[in-house]
Image (cartoon, rainbow, N blue to C red; front, side, top):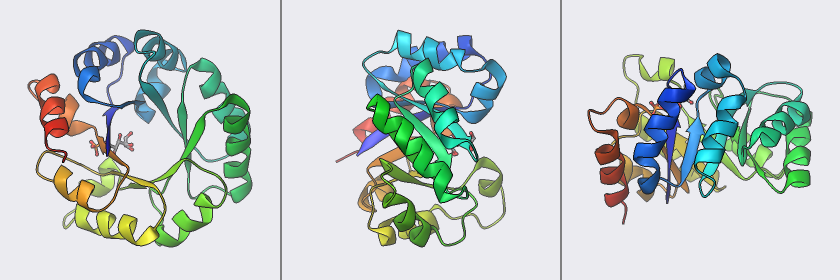
Length: 207
Ligand SMILES: O=C([C@H](O)CO)[C@H](O)[C@H](O)COP(=O)(O)O
């Protein structure tokens, strides 16, 4: 299983600093949606230039104009771009077209989707790289939030998937057991006192 650090900070300088600390322990560096909105596509270019050996994930969360939005993120240096699972199939197909032309990949984010396994199977058939079983920061903050629900849904989907929703050192083993290809960790790394150590421990917890 790969580890993806989600950088939900708000400046390119902070993102570069964090990525520099944690890069040795992660496979994928994700530029979070708030970061891209705050800094623009230039943050993608800055991170890719600093870490050309890493997979750079632009969390665009695109809902429309899939081909156009994916293409501008790829042109800026992204290797993977997220499109929302709530988008029309034509939006996802357009993004996949852009990815295919550039030799890159699309990840569909199932945030807000009720029947995640069913939608995962639909979008997998459109040629996406993998599907993200995701509970966003607001959903995680609600009483009774349970990561296990996401893990069960991912396992039931029978398509390549990632998991994002407050993954931490206490849950990463369960994420791996669920069969996920990628564990996404944001706050567990960027909010840690020592982000490099936190990322190292996540990596060390993998079997
Ligand atoms: O995608 C995310 C969220 O929508 C804000 O951009 C997070 O990066 C994702 O939820 C992972 O972060 P954590 O839940 O803090 O691990």
